[in-house]
Length: 222
Image 1 (cartoon, rainbow, N blue to C red):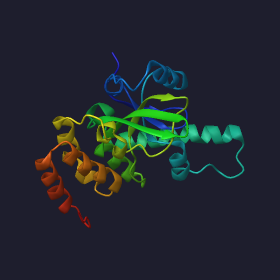
Image 2: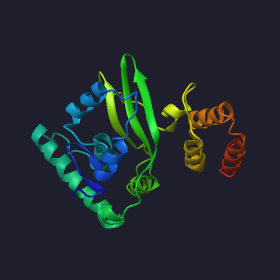
Image 3: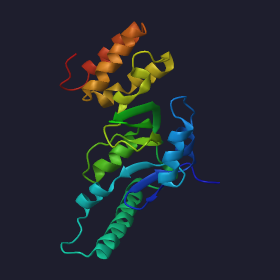
Image 4: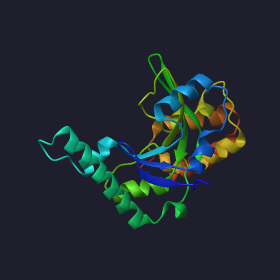
C-alpha cells in the first residue's frame, strides 16, 4: 500500500505525491472532462503530484557549473535534487510525519485556447520548507487535467471556481477560505473575490469575520 505522502526527486523537480495526494486529485467535477484527465495522464504517465521545488529553483539553489556538457548538467541536477531532498528530510523529518496540504477546491486558468484544472492547496508546512532553503512562497497545486495543453500561470486561490459568478460556494467552502484568508492577505485578487462572493451569497457574518481577520494582518487596509 502506497504511503500517504512521499517526497522524492523526479525528473527535474522535487515532488510530493502518494495516496493522500491522489485522493485529493481524484475528486470528480463536471468541468474536468475525461479528455482533460487523459491529456494530463499522458503527460505525467499516471499519478498525481505537487511540485515543491521546480527545476528553475533548483538551478538557483545549486547552479550548474559553467561550460558543463549536457550530460554533466543533467548529472549535476540529479545530484542536486538528491542533496536538497536529504536536506529537507534531515531538517523536517520523514514525510509520514508532515502536516498534510489542505485542499481549498478546484481552480482553473486559461491562456488563449488552453485551459487547466487543478486542486488549490493550502500548505504552510511546505512554505516553511521552501523558506528554510531561502525560496519564496509557492502556489501549491495538483494538476488534474488540461486541454489541449497545461497553462503555466498563477494557480493560487483567486482561481477557485467557487469564487466565480454563477458558481456555488457552500457555507463550508466559505468557512474554509475565510479561515485561511490571513495567509493570503497580500493576494489582492483573491481577497477581492472572497469579499464579492460573501456578499453575492449573503454570507454577511462571514464578511465581518473576514474583515476582522484581515485587520489583524500587518499593513492591510480594507
